[in-house]
Image (cartoon, rainbow, N blue to C red; front, side, top):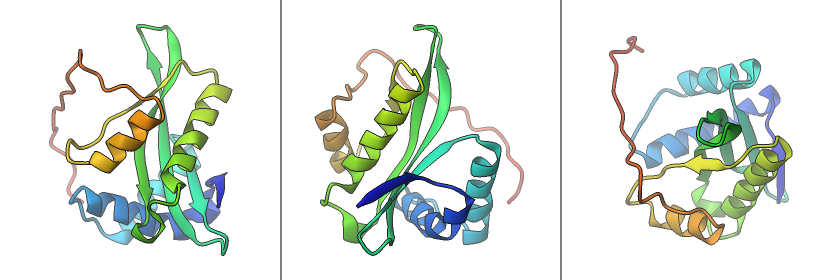
Length: 152
């Protein structure tokens, strides 16, 4: 397995993986919209995406990170926004390798840490994160305010 930072040349491989990620969370969007979203992130440098490829160079997973800042630490940090491994590639260490790539990237950039959230029902993800040293926050709650968006 090979992990590399994604570029616009990877969009054809990333888009179906991103669709699988959204489907896991019961969100289905048209593939062209997903491709446009990812293309925007990559072209503007809004996020850093790592893609995993198997020995045949087939894309089998990805992790997407967004930069943020920790006001409490007065340092940069990273948000692990999306992690997905195709069903056929699960339980082969792909998720762990992607999370390690995210950690290595954060350390290399001088970040103070990585933050993530996951569904309460995602027990496999929680087990992975905890095995890698992530600690579930018992102090803070996450809130969300949905705002009226553009039709699309």
